[in-house]
Amino acid sequence: MAAVVLPGGRRCGTFLARGRPAVRRARLALRVLGPGGAMRYNEKELQALSRQPAELAAELGMRGPKKGSVLKRRLVKLVVNFLFYFRTDEAEPVGALLLEHCRVTQEEPSGFSISFIEDPERKYHFECRSEEQCQEWMGALRRASYEFMRRSLIFYRNEIQKMTGKDPLEQFGISEEARFQLGGLKA
Amino acid sequence: MKLNERSLAFYATCDAPVDNAGFLYKKGGRHAAYHRRWFVLRGNMLFYFEDAASREPVGVIILEGCTVELVEAAEEFAFAVRFAGARARTYVLAAESQAAMEGWVKALSRASFDYLRLVVRELEQQLAAVRAGGCPLPPRRPRALPPKENGCAVWSAEPPAGARPGPAPPPLPPRRRASAPNGPLHAASFARLHEWYGQEVRALRSQWLRSRAQP
Image (cartoon, rainbow over the protein chains, first blue to last red):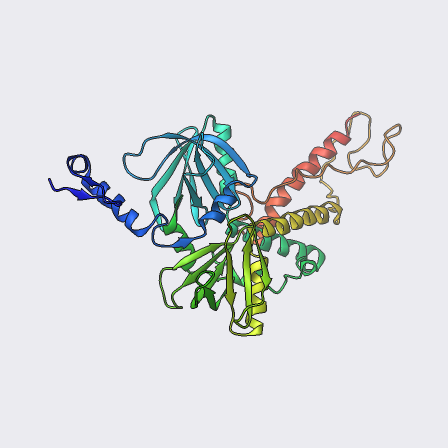
């Protein structure tokens, strides 16, 4: 049972050796990399975003994707294309999920899960207090991506153009932007 | 704060058209040097890579709530991405030409989700207005006309005596959010969408005709 030096120079022997060594090792590795993991991002701005008015906010049961995760009560808040989750008595979020290329699936009578296209088996589970609340959240989350907004814009633009013969984006001065062209869409 | 970075990285590198891309110089910190990085704008996320061939972004600037402005800097074609707040950081970037700088400033200042949502809502309203005030459907003549109790046929051009002056217009179909689940936006062809909306209009119209024929 070797002693392990934790960040900060603290030593920990027996305590660390017990339990699940793989998990402990992984946690230490993450700390060595830094709180943000490998990719840098402007955390302060993300925190500020979490304080903006929400599209939807509620206390839900939440279970992380790792095997053996426990259901916890979290304040869940949808702001633009991010889903923030807070401990119910804290002002700063525990975490955030970017909602691009995600899939929202119904789970049991009044719950749903969010998974991402690059790892569909890795699911974040949420439990609602009613079927109605569950449907409300699922609908809102499916509409909450930038990509969904973009497709909506292209759809409306096309419809209006067909009915009136005019491009409604011209008034905004954005009709030439590549991101709003039909040709740019992929399934 | 935890963040689903793998999903972010996927969003950065997935096989879909980007909103803008190119080399920019990024100032490391207040007194640091500029580093040349490959920048990719997708949605409201500005990713930067070591170079154009890198598979993983070095980092990302989440653009929600930012303002973009030109700056006076030693570097030519410089601009800044600024955030509100006491200790908020300002990102100073520099392009390699005047045209590139202008392109980036325009793209970044319109990149927020909020802005896009505003435009979408505006178009949604415009489409509803166009539909409401648009050409009415030509009345269809059914083959057999059952006589009504007061002797007036359903399709009579003359309103029955004592009826309300002028026909009331049919009720508008409920405002449909294109964003409803299983709504029309799942890559449906125009013909299918036309048929789908048409069904609702036909149903409403026959409902209106039935109610109008009541004494």
